[in-house]
Image 1 (tube, rainbow, N blue to C red):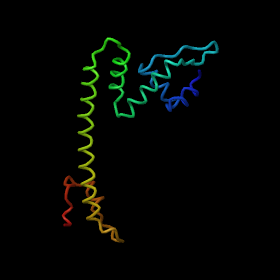
Image 2: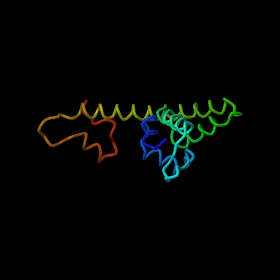
Image 3: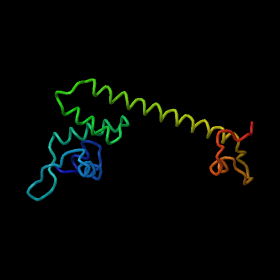
Image 4: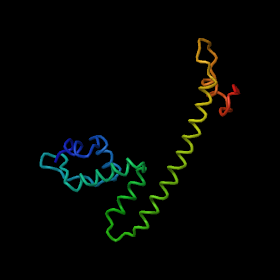
Length: 137
């Protein structure tokens, strides 16, 4: 099947599919007599797997590791579990970081008068090191 059909079946853009091939995340497809890519059902399964892992937030290296484990029928499930647990730790770190950003922005929004004056604690915070408390309380 051609790349546009695979794109529709998987929800992965043609450009991204070609990128995954270029970084060897997925094997290059067979070529038809006309030189066009000719994808198999297995290629579609691989792309769906990649898409699912990406939706879970795995970086490309993590997706590559998961693919290797998925394709290795002699793998130990503990290896998959360890990879997933490591990813959870990374996610929790990002959540904490985003919560800190949210809290800082909430404080800055509270400090901003939102009127016609040009003084703005939100913009001022981008040029100062102290961004946790604008001192408006």
